[in-house]
Image (cartoon, rainbow, N blue to C red; front, side):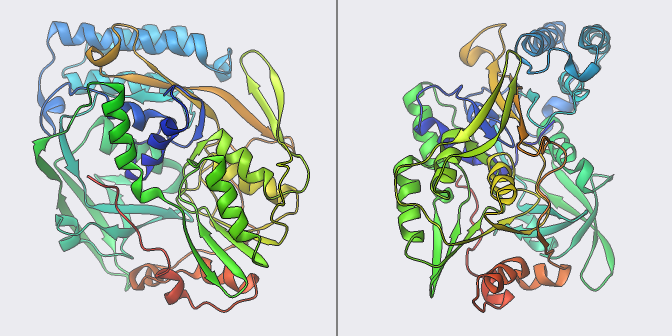
Length: 459
């Protein structure tokens, strides 16, 4: 299972490259965010779904949701053996569980739980969305096996009570670690959203405290697009903060690429800038992936020949995947790639490909380990806006040229650099500073930390 993190908005931009929003993608969160803006609210208000008892019609609705999910998995999941899980028996089990559910929220969560047995980063329920927009006001991230507060949204309760560099020991009563982080975020933010977030924290000095942070709920309802063109406008608005950003320091280009959402022309433009420099630092931290075409184009501009990526394994076949020679003058200088726990899918594939080809040095933290390829499918019990849920289904896995998958493993950096709590509190970026050192330039961690300020997704 996977969460709808606020940093997943990159998925929207895929639809500006193809007209079919079912395009396959290598994105940590699949394409569910693009669907989420299309969905009507099942209930109004934060927490209403959790508290209301379930009616017979609502129970039937969720049973239909489970049926759609089961049929979608049987038809589309890349492994017809489901990793040895008996999904038919599991379906029967969860039919009975839903029949006994006390609330609508409980029933919906059982559909998500049905899928959890596959333990697949790209296969999950896209649950009904709430009509009132909520802002949690904080951003947390895994570094190593620990979780820290990294950014706080101005004007929120979180800004008053939390601080960058606070280590999150528990959230909502659950311990926070790398293994369970994605599932925990999915549960607390999507399956069971809360009016408050309860934190047990440890500050950089070592003192512990508890904070209860209120969720900010908008007084106006979410806008729900009623046509494809209207939806596309929402898509374009949401991706504005995901633009390319770069800094030139002498003969070194530092490129902050936040998503694989760009056209060939945009990639070529960045590579022409890079070709004027001796070294390129490609910052893929926080980059959750995106379109396969963008990945292939970028790889093709980093090599002077066709480069093998791996074997794409689907339900029907196994095919070699490669980035073809671009036919243009490519960047042949020194390459350093930065990754972290939120670098996923296309980011991981690029990083591991250049690592296996001895083309680059990888710096930072172990990546997400979520590299499969997914498609999303609206529920079949009624199409369009009358059916506010869908499922993301893994349709392919990728076996890299070393014969291994990155799923649940991630890319292990050549140079492991983790920020300390004090680094986060003071806005220092030791990983970028180390990458700069490897590129032959001096950049202190404090200056590096100010280079690419965090930008919140637009409302």
